[in-house]
Length: 160
Length: 163
Image (cartoon, rainbow over the protein chains, first blue to last red):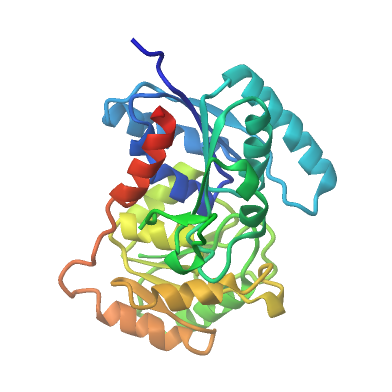
């Protein structure tokens, strides 16, 4: 019998998190750790898993940071690294933004498969991190068909 | 009850101020409750407000509301759809330093024809948009967005997880 797949589902709080949560049937039956920037989301995650008959997920909090906050980004790198070393996920799924980008870059070095779904808010062009993450994402996705390209990002539908 | 929610990151004084003015002009209108962030400079005087809300409390407020009023953020639009609530959105503008770029204007255009979504392109359009959204409240149930993403997207991700 194959080992249960370990998934790390990571996103910054707000719209990125809401979109990540809508993907959750994709990791039903897996051992899941959610990572985000607000501890307040943990209760809803636990209640929903129980209601849907899923194993209770793990939950970790990292700090917010964007690309202009160099010191915060450094701390965030360390936080993400620590979580990945502890979790050793087979697969990392993220809807962005900076926390997800870092998880893909670091996780890829550790041998994880990586999935990047660019936010549905980026309807006219891919986000900057979405553009930069391309070479490091095994599945590189946009939610708008006109943004899809032959070599990626690809379109496989949206969260709505 | 009308619930004003503008996200947890940046204030949106232009929307808070316009909603405050609408409340003054409509003394018999529905109660308004607002979440305007801890960095707001404009403090509304005609409705109750807080800076930030814990996620659980925020979800309860959404559930209890008759109408949501928000920036044109995807989190707000999706959450409104999940609860089957109509939402009036006003996009933030980069030129007014309300956000980093004009993606909210693009979002507002993309979603303005979605059932339950009402777009006020700026503060001058807010009053009419609110009045119109309220007038339409009794119409047969707002379309509800289900809880999950499109099945083809879920399947694509599931395939990577199990390969």
